[in-house]
Length: 447
Image (cartoon, rainbow, N blue to C red; front, side):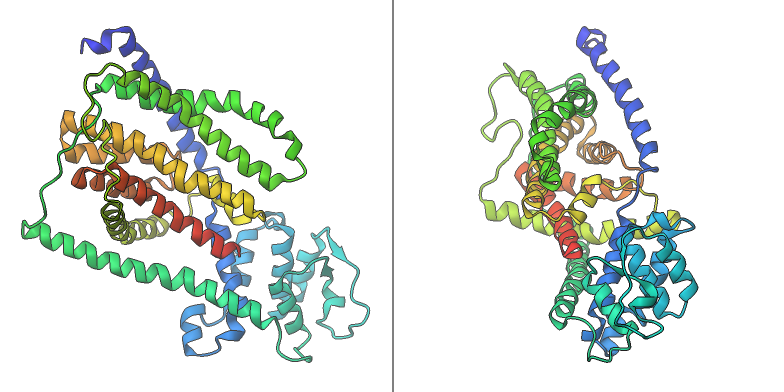
């Protein structure tokens, strides 16, 4: 208790109090943020409608559902709610086309009346359900072109671009069947681990070494460095500065966003890492594997362990996500970066988002939560509590009440990997692979 009564202890307590206030406010505010779940659901249904002409069979009904167009129409109506402005203009136009195909011409015209960007009607069409009755947007998407063709009755032949339809089908298969296959493999691996544990045949835990820091030190690092300095003060200083530095890129908003996200995250990392370096200075001889036990080599072993734990965590996170959706619905509060990836048209911006999500975030967050926090907590209360508490802080730090439970389960997997194998590098790889799977899924949906 003596260290808590020192100036460093008082600073740590003040930082902890500020962190609690900031995290409580952030978690409550997250409920007001929009969820990317609506966009993901909508885009998956759009892919199903676009791909349907290529898969008209019992297998297609199993994969796409009995009536993808009707499912998309209902989903767009649900997302629009009572205010049509809730949907972007392109999605409202798709909704209007689907309402016309369903025979709800009155609803379709009401939706079209809210669109500011319709061109003149098509003067060459005479069909009562043709574009002259519903208007045409300046640049219809592949799905809208296909729906317009269906409204005309497909008199000129099959509707839609067959190449784009096959591509949509391939993307749909990748985002639906691949995760199922991975979860089945992960479930088998998880059952095997449980069997080995029940038979007491699991290998012994690796020696857990960590930096010789106290609870006051890690409180200063996480609460003071990561939250107060990184999440509160750094954006106040860096965001206006980035606005000036990146102003010449105003004509290219996606690239400007990509660089802004990358540079802001680098700035957020700087303060905590400098504090960690200061805390470790003159702490005695460093262990042969370093204070954080990176132990990258052999890389194949770290990668194999990371991939195995990733597969075992997948079905658990999916189960928790399903229970959360069943009991709570969609609480909102998704990471804003997800929507940026889903909507960005710039390959360079996507590369910058990918670098941030798959390299910088895993390196920094694993250094903080599994490299420093977990060993210190484990030294105080045991390895199990170290894993649980570090996972809880990891989930809280993402400031999303709706995503807390899945992130907590992910944190348990990352902590167990660190505890069981003694390799921080393996946890970084697993974290990067997890973010990579999420990133790849978003890219497939975005097309």
